[in-house]
Image 1 (cartoon, rainbow, N blue to C red):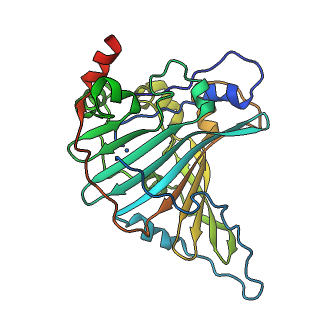
Image 2: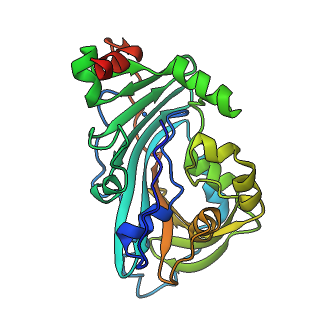
Image 3: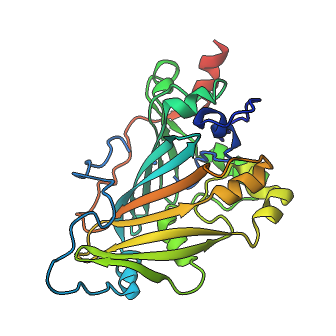
Length: 305
């Protein structure tokens, strides 16, 4: 289930070429339901874009307010992995995740962009549309349009396959209670510093250790060389803490880690960043499982046929 972005042999590093430097992988363990959560009116606003009040100086939103988000039992977020190089910038992958920590239930949808798909010609998930995973404390289900014809349903049960995979790589089992951006926020090194304050909220600078939040394949997560490279490395980031308790934004720059892991040099204008847009002020999410689910083996039979 790992999606690896391959390194093309080209001397000029454009976005398309730089995509091959990424160690990004989409690993289904710990992941996304039949229907996506309703789109927010604007999932990616510019942090602090509103004009500050002209009279009274705005107050700093205290960092302690972050605990309100971390205490949320259900919500949803969007994640975007962005690559910039040679004056170009593209979103390589985007995800939409909804979670309920009480059920527990974790719903993840993954969309591989056309730019990323060009780097993944042999990956079976490429071109299959949005792939979704639903994880509870007992099952991991995948919704893949490519399963419809061989299986008679787009839903297949991934539970046993992922248990074998996590055992093979010595990884922890799928955890429906893991909310990735919360994991990033809980790992922050030192005391976040406010760098901008306006009427809409406060922008904080943060430091994230050891590549927390960067998606790696199962192989990469257990590779001694990669683990040794990442250990002790830190990534700069920012958190936009809104004054009204609305959407929280987290941005982390993983460029140095990506370049160090791949061992590929890159021009100064190359960046690899991840952004999360987190909403917790919503009604409870639907947690029903799909009624018609096939065994994963039907996809292998379809391929053989």
